[in-house]
Image (cartoon, rainbow, N blue to C red; front, side):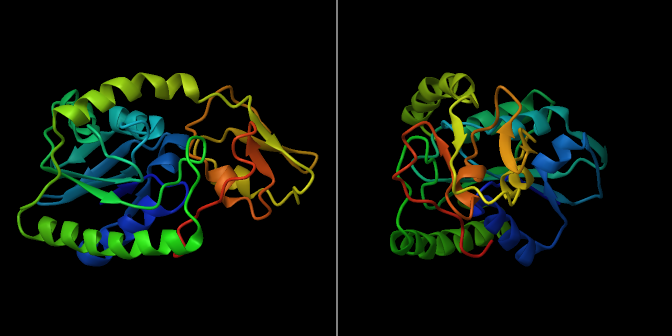
Length: 250
């Protein structure tokens, strides 16, 4: 079984590659949290793979919530994590292991896959040509990860002291930075409602044909900004002149 969380397609792409290689059902963690679907049954010898992006060198809030509330029925599966990241993975593997340790479950292996940067709140995402070059390299890394998983997890990712320090510094900044007050929509909006559809935490509602952020906080996944077909959604002033990125195969 493959659990994934994805806003712009990077992690979903990796999850689909895992499915192509090993089989198993794809479960959208964001959808599961919205529906309060935390109970999942496993059979003997099954592996549960978790694929998600790195936020502030840690776990997205929705991923952390899903793991915390996950109820495993049947046999205990082997737990494996795969993170996608644009800058650095940091100590996200330790945070992932810690989340499961709190449930009395050990993690078998963890992997990292570098993808195009998509944190538009902080960085300018790459232009299409640069993104495609990064994706070409990421395909090679994904193959290495899948081969490692197939051969007894021979080359997992393990963070070091510097990575742990980065996570310790950046982690506390994540929650307070996730407010929705700075989201705006300009006159280019065509009222398609795609932003409402893709929001993992259902923080957006359409009112009079325009999106309105109805929750004080969200995951800051940037899905609404990146996937708007007319680039009508902004976050403060910083995103107006920045490129948009969505994985081309998702």
